[in-house]
Image (cartoon, rainbow, N blue to C red; front, side, top):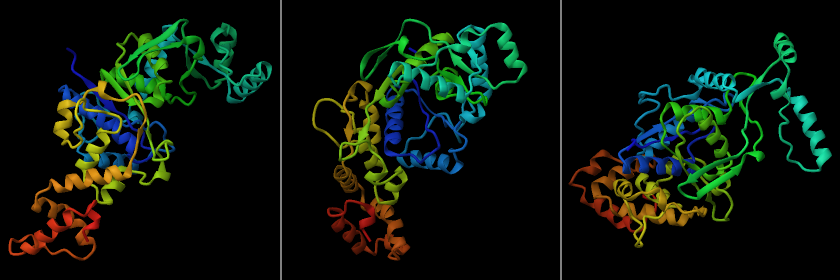
Length: 380
């Protein structure tokens, strides 16, 4: 069998949030279950919004959760570099190759021209779903030569073939899209930067990714990716689209529901093993029985993509508190003392000699509070 290779590919336009952390966890668990490779790739082609601080925040969040990657930033690997901003030449080569093979073409349409034709088309049909009319696909040689001589900016569009794009989703089953509803999408912008569709497929091909586990907000992108895989003659990976996480109000989880990054939970006194346990059960079930408490190793021993629910999961803060309390109860007195230490230090209540066996009262107090506290920051 081919070795399982999965990837988590965040964009450093924000810190690691709960949804991203769960996606990373599902990929990590699947790799560990099957003795595979977990790749971390940073999709930083959005130059204006990406930052080194955000990259560090993502890495810190993954490390706090214990999701160490086998290939990626700070680790390296056989498919380096793992930053998309350092792989631009490979995207341009793939795009040029598709043009040479007749699977893509240069598009010289300016944004203003596209907007005008879109408005005209929607006004004529009364429907707001205008698709690119392939005007540049059939340019005659003279017009193309004139545009080139003028050095007119040009993008590259993928030539969508007739037929259907089909893939078997490991969560949602067989999914089929009619290609007639997919416009000739841009794969390389006129500034030479790739679109998401091109870069993600090029990287997954180069890094030999076998399974793509990502949020189901990407389902509409997947038929385009399947077409690209087929166009370059690469095997199509297996897909598993994970349902969204909703807030208690049943709306998509966002900043208004509380913490905006995983590290905020770390600072608020949550244990990484509790957060890991909680995230794993957000939309995934271990099967028979009502067991809820797992270590990371126990989760990796039983995790299977078939256990992912097709319905959206609801983020329940009270349930997270419960998981945290249960995992704190599992800590030995000495381990609990070390976990509480930073919070007592911040409150001016710590002295290193508290860990001395002469201070049995200190450990007795911790044990007394253990059954009441839900987070580490409550101990002071």
